[in-house]
Length: 388
Image (cartoon, rainbow, N blue to C red; front, side, top):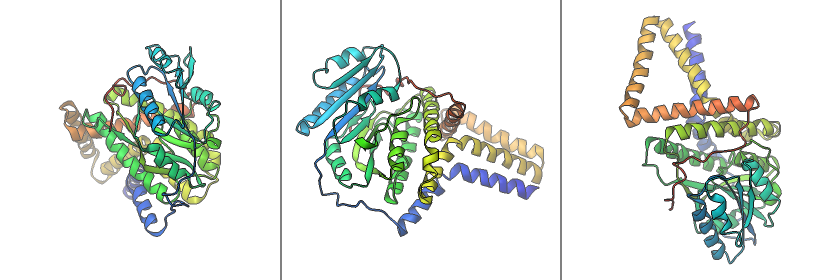
């Protein structure tokens, strides 16, 4: 009995940590024996035209800065950049700010709140360029990003390029620090995946796709995951580009981050349900990457919780129930005391656990058909100071 409980606890705990520890380690080992470089030298150039698409809801604090950044980039490219903005029933002055730029951009304004997928589909119909760059409304793009994108898309096997996001406020709060730490790990994993074939999805802050890969996005699904993995299913590579840089603020308030993780989990798992029939028919390495990087993360709260409960049961069997209860109580009290005293290690652990719970809630909602079509920008993210 004790051995069975111990093995079951170990299996569930392994499934919980695998996406973050053993999976990237396995990719490092794989990269030592197998890598898939680009088919062309990155110094070669191919003439390509670009279009930037972004959707905005209530983005009044940041939308002007974002558009100014894009206009400056267009000037540096000699005017070869189509800028498309969809405003989704904003109520905070975003529409009025955007209309000041109407003579310099392609502007679509909706009086109702339909959601990001709807807006991107509207913009996609107006794109004239070869490469479509999709960004968040609050990012700042580095001056050399488009020149670097050209070099990656010179490889005809590349269908999607994931930009490199840096959070600029990681020292603002524990929540922001946790988000920045998680994202640095995410960037390293995407690079390992890219080195050994394809990354498992893009991030909505900055990614680019060939126009033929930009299919209509179903309502309520994560556009970045859906678009990038659609390109993968079409036979293209999804590549991480460390030199295609974007800068953004991380959520600094735990309540905002929790709601954001629920929404991301819901939209991401919705994309999984839509694409899984195609993904599971891909090669074994790609399916392994997808399950390790994406699928298991939606259920980290479940696997971690199951591992903890089975570990508790094992301890109760090998010692007694009182010892197990005391040990569990001590762990919980240490975490609660550290959180109440705002000790950084304890707050970091609590933030990570809440992130797992929020993601699982989102996945459960998607599984039950409750998709989130609209979005509410996090106030701590939509502040003015952003930059390299």
